[in-house]
Length: 481
Image (tube, rainbow, N blue to C red; front, side):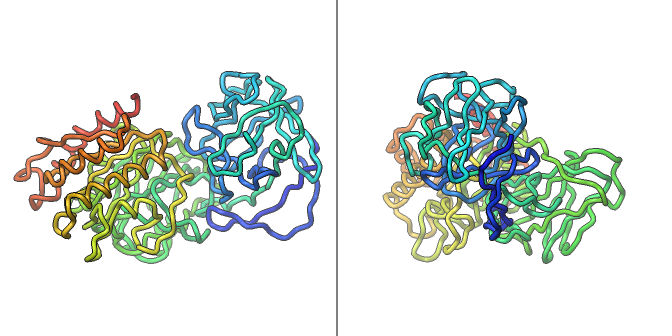
């Protein structure tokens, strides 16, 4: 279909992109290209916050993350589906509704008429998306300018809240950090498009690739673990530069690779900077199959897996999530407190909002992923930093409310610390927020200090397995409640 929409070429800058100064030109929709859809009324971008069916389509401040990237899929007859680069799912008028104000969500691509849109021209190079089933236009509901405002449908009236600019994004180099087929779990600093930095322990990268070999591009030396095609994690020690991960070439075909850097107490051992992958000549990447649901673990060195054999990879959070087939993130560091203590103990109630553990770290962009379950295990260290019970309870309430604000639909599990510290305060905090999906978890009897820890504090491998055995069913139940 020929459009008068202005398609502005962009250059990649990290996961965000900036405009390249070029003359405006009319163009056809390119089904191989990626676009950001920007509201004429608000200047904000269309976004989804997770990979789940039924996730609401909303607007958010434009950052050009994969949550805001879309492709056009041709349905024929001048109709297209809008496919999310984050989830691979398409924009869908919920329940095939023809009503004004109906919910607009993402759903598995069925090529149904309630997922098909024609593009109607508006002045100034903007377009309107008119649904084939309802005949109504995608509409920024109630002309909101707020982040999180929902996209709905309404009679096609040509209003500016129904008009969208199609901003075309530059294609990423195959294997570069910006390659959309590389999937990132955890909190990463995306500010440098040539080098993404994992900021918290337990972050990892998954990519699908063709060919027979793959090399990891590192900046400076670091220890890391690599799993290829779901195999055992192989340890690489003190490696830098271009690291050959397949000295014995693989069979030809499609493969997957996962890499996770090894931390010490939550700080990485070396330079945790991912500079992409290098493939065989003519090989390419593809989007790997990854979990659609994510568990986020917030804690201290116990959550990091300190003193276990593979740190994060043998910690209870990684073990429980992998057992359930879930994605996972760790927002944890050794020695962390819940409360920001006067003597410098890092307060996770505040750091929960940050990209990294440093006091000056940028605020995290919570649109990059949506946790379905949050597990909090904090309080072991506060007792040694003169934190009072009242201070602890207040900070816990703050953290619980922040978790609810950032993850509106998540279940939050507040674990009793294994050393039984601040139990009444933790319980009182959960009671104070009075939210049925925020729950206190009694961990009495989960581990035995004399046999399941390395130092009467930090679980050993056996201890982490025991914790995962108890925690996995609770996470599974939380996902269905």
